[in-house]
Amino acid sequence: MLLHWGAEPSFWRLRLPAVISGVAALLVNFWLCRRVFGPTTAVVSTLILAVLPINIAYSRFSWDPAQSLLATTVVMYLAAQASRGAWEGRAAADPAIDQRMRNHLPLGAAALAVAILVHPTNLFLMPLLVLPLLIRWHRELLEYVQPRPWSVAKLACWAAALAAVAVIAIGGRHWFVRAAERLAQPGDLVTFATLYVQLLWGVSCFRFLAGSCQGDALSGNLFDLAGLVLAAALVVLVILYFLKQRPRTELTLAAGYALGLVGFFLIGGPSAIAPHFERYAIWMIAPAVLLVSRALVWWATRTGPTVWYVTSALAWLWLITFGQEYFAFLQQTGGQSHRAMRTAQVEPKLAAWQAIVGSLPQRDGDAAKAAPTLIATTEYWIETPLQYLGGRRHDVQVLWWDGTGDWPPEVQMALAEDRARFVEFTTSSALPELRRRLAQQQRTWRETAILDYAGQPVIVILQPERLTERPAAGQTTASASRPAGGPVGLDTGR
Image 1 (cartoon, one colour):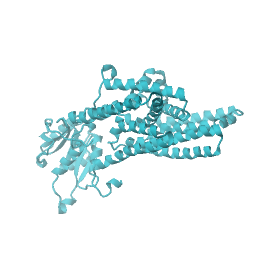
Image 2: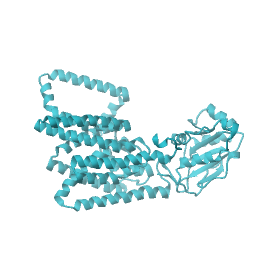
Image 3: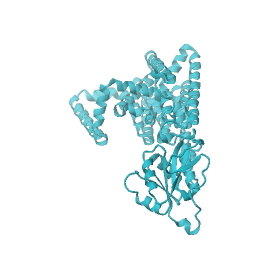
Image 4: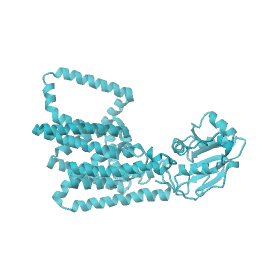
């Protein structure tokens, strides 16, 4: 809100919090990791986070999940400190160490609450904070349980029943049915594991945001295949690190992380981590990077600097691939993913807004009090950005409607007074019916097409012909009876 105080709506202001959050996540990770695990791990983990394609991509989007990395990083290191205090307090029975753990757990709980506000799926980090409690006081819990097993069993049954009722009330019985089905279908687990690798490797964000990197490893996608091979090698490395070193803090984090992954899998299934939904899984990134970084640092102490050369080469590979599969691909094709992600030099929704506002007549005197121009659309992905851009204007009103049935009263009035404009994606299922309806009006309608980088129409504006002005660069006009298009490139801002 501060960024928009006294300023006109702008997409770069919407994206700025994500950029700030992405950079802050790196700084916070380095600072906290250096305090908890040392400078070498801090450098390695920060480098990996800085070049992960999904982190770079989501640092450019004004979505709530874009701030998840920063929020979950804080939770993770507070949980790590609490885990270390729990193990040390258990071994030494030192009140000072116990107090340190007690200080970190409330801070971790507060950080988790903030993370959940950022995005609800960050709740799956809760096991990271629960395990330190069980580690430190498991003896006390056993001493309480053993003399009264039936009372504890009854209490556990009541708690489970209440939890089940709460889950059914929120999501319905189908959650339990689906969770049971996933447990009975090993194929879902394999799919989830593959999508997990693609999330961290970058394939998911390439497919969703740009539409590139299509095809799987079996069909010849070498980048996808390289990610699966590297993931298998890193899993082996982490397991060796755990077996050889038995690092209690890292093992506790890994156990809590695994519980979170299992819960996410049972509730959401593979589809919750697939391309177009991978933003719900950003909470998984920071713990995975930390555990891999710890294993790499350990391996480097045994093999010398070779591992750092390999890590640096992978970092460059990530950056080069991101440039090709994201920026270059968008500039060549305009995007081949969801229609809302297609882009140009000027973001298409912004270009449509500029085209409409630029065609409006000047309002002076009594004309300034006249009814506003109505922009109607059946597309949520158009209505939301136009609502934002027109939030401070009194001469423009943006309206969503479902495109079926009779005209909404606001549209009927605007049509009668020549105040109506319609904006749709060229692939919208509502566009043919809209054209048919407008053809029945007692006026001629013209279309202005907004083009993507490849010169293909992505958005079409329909407005009365007598109000249509000469199209600006990146736009073409056509009659309402045929689709508009033209080889003129535009932007994005992505």
